[in-house]
Image (cartoon, rainbow over the protein chains, first blue to last red):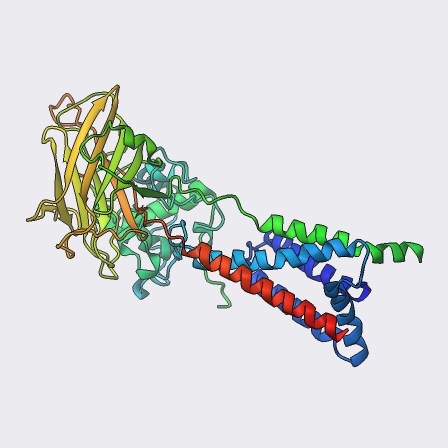
Length: 241
Length: 275
């Protein structure tokens, strides 16, 4: 039995292993949601069945082993496997029924947008403060007194950071300020956590509204100090754009 | 050729093995509620709402949350005494009791603690429900206890500087200091008539909760070390009063097993007849 079945089974399992374990470690990739993996596997299995049943002969070759297996005509070691499948199927259905009707113990998920779009007036602003060593040093000084308690040595690990969720941003991480423009940082520093739009919910960030305590010029200097201290460069528009 | 035939006969062993690997990969460790949510179990009998040392609290599951200094509002400090709080919850179907436990080297009259909740369905910023710039946020309900007052207060706020007591006081609180540890129990009916001001607990549903602690030890200036917005805080976490046990999912599962078994038997019988 099964010469014709083994290929689609192995193909399905290999694709599952690829999606589950290989895709997440590819550069610029991320783990795929289970629902998406399930969808891909359904497509693979549907395609396999379609391919295997294109002609009457191939259809018989595909289904006959399954029929022999289910009716117990295969004999041998497959008899044990048949009883196993016949016992597992109802249990699997029962498990699914329980899972879909039992209430979840997990808190609701949070679909927070990490970098929500800023209001239009902040888009494309350029830093008006000259990038001089003096201004950078001044910005680092402000950073040390205002930002470092939470953001630490530009790594998000300040001594006051432990209780905050989400944790203060790690500016050395290439997915934070390195992928943002200076104008974006200006908005986030100036308006703080209460400046977030609705997609920034559930509004857990403790970021102060620094416009109450710092001038715009000082905020621009802090931004220069942040980039310099973290060893990052702000994202900019290409000249061709 | 012989090798190919052998693989053909034993293919299912490998397939079952691979399938097992797939299932094992899908099985995740049980989701931990620690440091994410406080769950108040439903208890029968009396609720230890006025006794932080009651044995019943030992049966409640513990969640621990790290604390940080309040930095959002300009009047701030950068170091706090309480580095974390342990939180337990219990309810009896009518009243909910929540206990905070945290270390404090000294007992002082100005030592204080508070719980914060959102009110209704409108989301609120965790910092006293500070007004949001781009969207209308909601108010927060704050349950406050101070050692020298010896009682709980039911407060409301929609931003720093707007904190005021509710005209109705539904919250009770009691604190006990032992061995450098405060245990403070807050309690209130699960639901109240004041839905616009009070948080309402629906058993089985998650809501938001945040914590605050003040170390009232006097400094050289004569002022408490932590007061007002100078305090230890957490941001939003989750709270749930557990619903009564529901056995219906087991019945549905049993029914599904029976139906699947019946379908399976009918299918095999039909196939055997056909062949």
